[in-house]
Image (cartoon, rainbow, N blue to C red; front, side, top):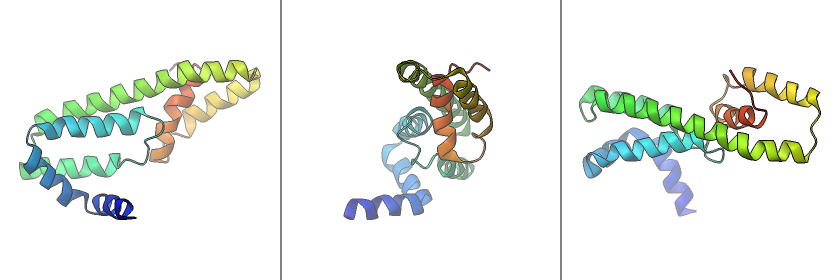
Length: 141
């Protein structure tokens, strides 16, 4: 129960905890932020990470001078891009095996492609799942 309470405290007071981490870890904070954004966008099982709110807090810390915007912005863009591509290829490699094993009909694949292109914009957890789903049906933009 203590772990859950500590996790909730971090999520609810992310700004204070991140400022403390910046002061404690110095330059290593950029690697930590990269790992969080990469995991949030790249691992299907990690959509619970505070990616969107974390970006707002990072922006505020850049505005205060605690983080460098010229370092944080390209690094986090790269983390999100790499995470999304990793998620796509996980879906592509594992999803094709599952879909072929299930002998999925062509109509169901078309339906999954339509869902992959339209559902993603609404919810952060759906955005994480959509990349894997798009990879599973070999959706090419």
